[in-house]
Length: 336
Image (cartoon, rainbow, N blue to C red; front, side, top):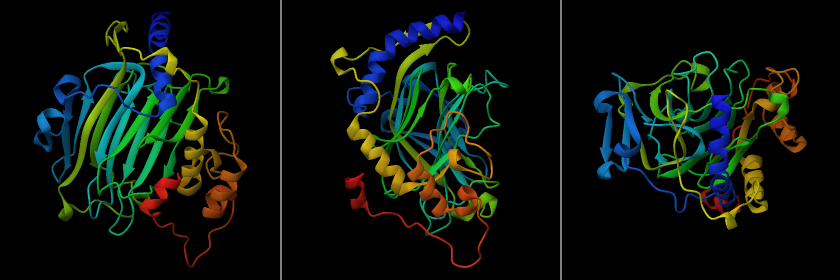
């Protein structure tokens, strides 16, 4: 009952603000917090270094340890964003994560919303993965993976999670790349409990690059991920009583829209058509039938089947020349 009342209070206060941001796909006007205003160090000792008077954070992975930080508050819904520049050169096995979780409080039924950046060998691109867990539903992976139309190690790019009671939307440079809708068929598998925001860099050698074939090579260390212009815009929740501590100011109701705009949806469809390389909804090696929340897009299904006929079409492995997707040119971003 307490959680239900909390949800109602936060949702009523935030709905205009979040739907407004959802419609605009922009963080314009949202406050940028310094590190001390919104975050605490999670681990890593001196592998976490502040810059620009706390408006930028460098996270380092070396042979000794990775590093990370966490928001000071728990949030129930909101808009969470950062500009991130990833490590350069050989980055196989390196994982940089920007995500929300309550695993420290709900060990058996935790929620999670993930951006994960997976490193690669020299000459190969970083890959980006999104994932959603609700109520401990880790037995159903909801991963999607993508290439990007730019090199995320060359410069800063903005990555955003927007979370409401009915939608989760992932953005890259204010372009929506994935929309995850709550459905009745999901039951309790949609994230619905307060979560903290995390940012980490760590050694994922066992799985991150080609299933663990390529591991972190520390002769290329230190690996440094740079975070700046951090935004926490949501309803802060008391971690003990689960009562609302503070809800950020709503924006003007004239901006209220429902869902992604036609222009945004066109850009999202274009991004997914050009850059998505994996979606759990089409993985026939894991699921005999798509999980209930999946809305199968025949065009996506056919494209992924051609990309990987074994995973997405039940085909057999063929030896010889492998299909390779090169990074699109920077100018391609204009057509997304």
